[in-house]
Length: 160
Ligand SMILES: [Zn+2]
Picture 1 (spheres, rainbow, N blue to C red):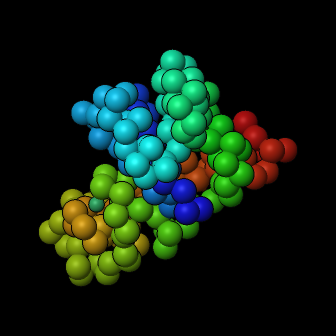
Picture 2 (cartoon, rainbow, N blue to C red):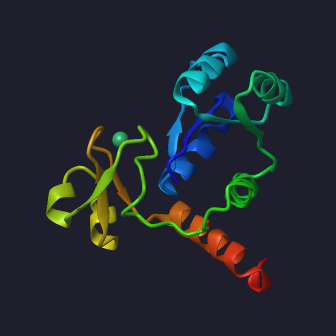
């Protein structure tokens, strides 16, 4: 998906997961509604927000905006995947850095020694590093829980 998304203050955690899912998501906690509208119109970005007022204001200006439903992180992600007809699958080769939205690349264990806790080095075999901010990622428990949830979306009969 080539769309650019911009999320508001309340959806910072959602932004992280959308980046992991490979979407181009702009987010800055200091942006006001005005900033978000300005950036969205300049970049033709889709606004994601929980704020009904911001949604209708953006729509009335001819911008693309979606009021995000869902109480939990998982529900919000499920809602957005459905809305944009995205596959509920995380492909790390397409993921973006959840922190800064830049591409990430696979890294060897040797490369990340000293950058992550020793226990993580012992337990994990796969690592990714952000080409921009240098943050290292691995398949931790949050990630596994999200994968389980995404799986339940593709196999509704097995859902919890
Ligand atoms: Zn980064």
